[in-house]
Length: 409
Image (tube, rainbow, N blue to C red; front, side, top):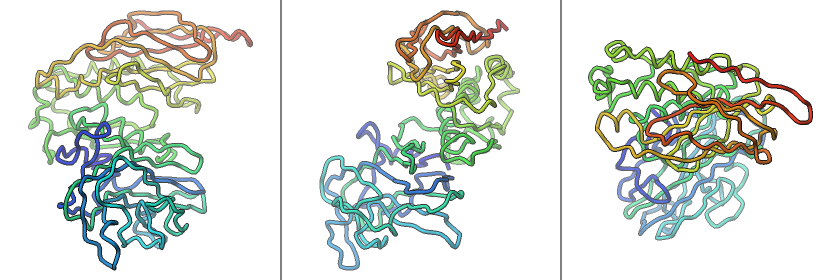
């Protein structure tokens, strides 16, 4: 299933702290997947699961003489499932470390933080109930939503985080974006890549190819020709699916069904993306997440930067421009704004803006940094998308000239 599979079920995803997974107390579901099967993790030390939850008149009935005030829902984790080393527990854990006991408070309360290191009242949990890894081998980790004791009311879970021993956050899409993954093909490829790609913190550390990828707008998949994608004669689904791969996860997609690609002769989308990526030395080992920030919440920015060489590439997308919105004639307001990339060597950068349908440069600029930050104003209001490449022209200390190769076709 897709990352955080509950996102694909609108009945479970509601407005809350942004958007949250709603867990009805009267509907007991046990171990509903929050990750696609398992994540791959590697790193000695303690891994931390953290999330926020609120409840509204949540009730439950606990067994084992545990007070019913501790009957709320929670997260559950399983490490190395199916192996002799398998371990599991819940978040928040109990003081005894026993994972079958009620551990999360019920009742009514506003957003509270729950952490795999601590019980619900803030006491340090025993090490046996925490995700402590004693080696640097590869391990699998699955995270689930769990509600075994609820009888009524509602709970909401949001901002699910997995934090590595060195403090880095694993991408698990825990903010519960309301957009369905199979409506937004850029989100689909980026979510998988950032979670399972070769450069992802939860990836295998080597190149990853995902095959037989497909997009359908219901629960089963029978081929593109039976879905609403047939109405997308311009191939917006393919366009966004390709350009979404500029994300830093390191996953290469192989789409399964070519029916609509052939029917509407959509091959030009591949050529435009190829033109843009040609010559970018991603194999030099220095490229990392650009960590670009957009001034508008509906501007999606994906891309990578080589901060040593002072060059990078970004795709800026109006996240409302999905194939689903296009074929259903949903209005897509244009967005203006700026993109900020930090952590760069100060200096002047040459910026090339690319038209993504033709794969050609339509504007070049020279932009100085402010400190170590490059601020770029979009050259037009975006209804769809635009791409850009940037490269540092010179360094005032070392006098190194770093040209950016631009192609017009």
